[in-house]
Amino acid sequence: MFTIDGTIMLEKLVDFHLNRNIPAEYDSKNDIIKKPGIIFPIKLSAESPDMKRSAHVELLTLFFGNTSVCYSPVENMLRSDEEFLNSLNWINTCNHDSCWRSDGLRFLTKYYFDMCEKVAPDIAPIEVPTEMSIGWMSFKVINVEVHFNHKPEGYWINIKKIRVTIEEV
Image 1 (spheres, one colour):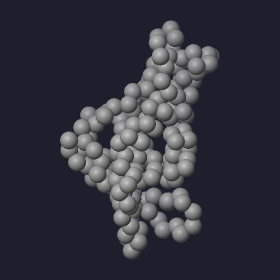
Image 2 (cartoon, helix red, strand yellow; image 1 turned 30 degrees about the vertical axis):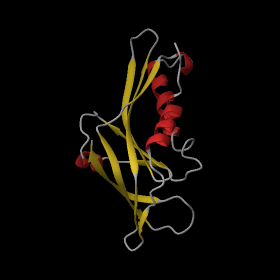
Image 3 (cartoon, helix red, strand yellow; image 1 turned 45 degrees about the vertical axis):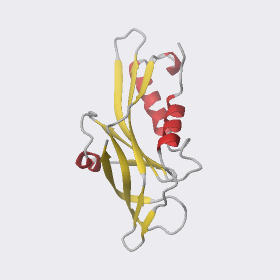
């Protein structure tokens, strides 16, 4: 069987589907930036080799601009409406195009090691059966509105709130 690195697949999906040619809109009076974005649901799972213990997590990953990365753990992926998406506690991992592939996706590696430790603490994580599924939701994000605390220096944005507008497909 072939093994594919899930983070590389996710990077390629973002590269293909996220239109980075649309310029961001800035509202400096209210400290708001509007950018195009995309969301991918991710399911991670690990199972002990004896199949007695398992762990799983469902995440929504949000990519916007060039390229900011956020994620939010969710209980189930059944809802995909704006009210649900805007009620999530989005965790920002990166706001710069030079490091979104490394720093921005590091949370997936942390989940991987935590789940392997939970289900099989006595063996190397490489020996634990794991799986990563990248889904496609029935909408596309057409606008990500980022409310931030104004910070003039650097490229890190101190995000207060993220509001997502979607278009049904």
